[in-house]
Amino acid sequence: MLATMPRRWIPAAVVRMFCFSAPALAFLPMKPFQQVGLTPTPGASTSMMPQGRTAVFPEPRTEEAAVAYLRTHGATVQPITPCGIEVKGLDIAAVEGTLAPEVAGALEVLMAARGFVLLRKQGRPLNEAGIRGTYLSAKQQCKLSECFGAGALHSTHGVHPEAPMRDIFRLSNHQEHGFNSVGPEWHNDGSFCREVFGYVVYHIIKAPEGEGDTRFAHLGAAYDLLTPAVQERLKKCASINSNSGAVHPLASPHPVSGRTSLYLHLGMTGAMLENPSADAPSCEATAGVAGVTLRESEDVKGVGEDVKGVGAGAAPGAAAASAGFGFGDGSTPAGLPTATPAGAEAHGIAPGVVAWRDAEMEAFFSAFSSLLDNPAVSHSHKWEEGDVVIIDNLAVAHKATPGAHTKAAGLRILHRTTVLSSRAFDPPPHLGMPHTLDTGEHTGVFGAGATWAEGYVGFRWGDWGDRGTPH
Image (cartoon, rainbow, N blue to C red; front, top):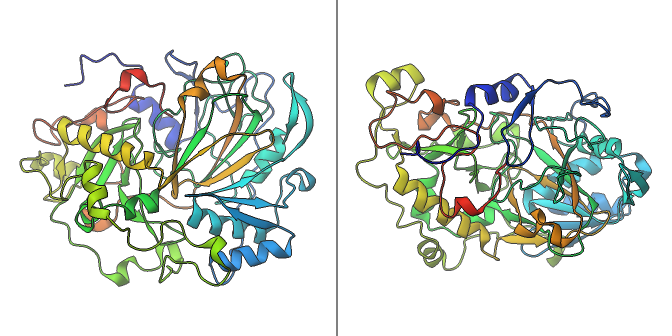
C-alpha cells in the first residue's frame, strides 16, 4: 500500500520513548532524525524547573469575567476576525515573564473561547546569537509559558545550535538560524503524546519583511460548519498517531469551554478508527469535563459586541458547507475493515470498531484541510517584531504558510515553547478504543485493506510531495 513510497522517518518505537519517557529528538531539515538525550546541547542553558499550575480562572468562568479582570490590570482586548483576540497593556518583560495567576487564568478562558491571544510589542532590545531586535529573552518566554496549563514545559523537540535554551524550539527560513520546513499542514502540537501539549507560546525573534505568516483555525467554529449528521459521525471517530500510536478523538468537548471541537494532525496520522454502532453517552456522563462546568451557551453576553464567542451557535448553511468541503452525508461507508477477534482481544478494541481505508483517508484529509482553510474559521497572522502568540492547543489548529520556509521573504526566526497538559486526550470510553495502538504492530489487528502508516510522516494525502516536514 504505502511500502513503495519514499519515506523520511524514525521508527515509532524510538519516537515512543520521547513521548512517554521524555527524551528529545533533534533533526536537520530533509535529513533523518537523530536521537539525543535530555542534557542540553553545547551552549544551551539548562531547562526551567517546573513550578506546577498557578493559573486561577475568573469566576464565573466566562469571557466577560476574564475581560473585566484584565481591565483591573490595565489591559484591554480587541477581537481578531474570525478567531483570536489581541490583549493590549501587558508588559511581559517588565515582570520577567511571570504573570499574576488571575491574569493567566483570564487569558486561558479567552484562549478557550477565541483560540489564541496576541500580545504585541513585547521584549527589550537584545542581541542573542547576533540577532539584534526587540524581543523577550528565552528565560522570559519560558517563564511566561509556565504560567499556563500544568505549569511545566514539555519539550520534546530537537535543539538547534543557536537555541538559547533547551526548551526553545527555534524555527527559521535559514537553516543556520533554526529548523526549516516545519509545519506546512494543519496540525496541533504534541499529537504524538497521549497528553498533547496544553498551550503553546510562539514568539517572533526576527519578523520577515515579506511572506511568512502563521495561520490559525478555530476548531469549534469549524465543527459548527458541518451538518448534524457529519458531526455525529465524527464524534465516533479517532486518529492514531503514526509515531507513537497515541489515539485521539476526532471531535470532543473542549476541556475548558465545553464546546465540541475537531482535532486531527494532517501530517502525523497513520490510521483512523470509527465505531458506527457506539451510543452517545448520557448528558450526566459528559458534563463537567475534567471538573470544569460546561457553559450552557456558546454565546458570550454582558461585555458588549467586542467579545462574542467565535462562530457561536448553529451555523447557517451547514449542509452546503459540509457538502462543499467533501464530507458527504455523514454515513459510514460499507465494508470497512473490522478488528480480528485476536486483534480486538489483544488491544481492547470493542466489537463494531472499524478502520478506514486509503480512499476514506484521502477524501477526509483533503476535506478537513479545505474546511480549516475556510476564511470563516481561519486567520493568517503576519508577524511583527515583538509579537507573542499564545494558543490553546485544543481550541485552534495552525500551520506555516509557504513563505515561512523561503529565504526570499527575509530572515524569519520564531521561538516556540510547549506546555505540559494536565490531562490525557483519550477517546471517550464508550467508543471502545484503546488510548494507544501501535501502527508498527498492526498485523492481525484489522482486516485486509485497512490503512496503517508508521513513521515520522503519516498517511500521505493530496499533494504531499510539495509540502515540507510535518511537526
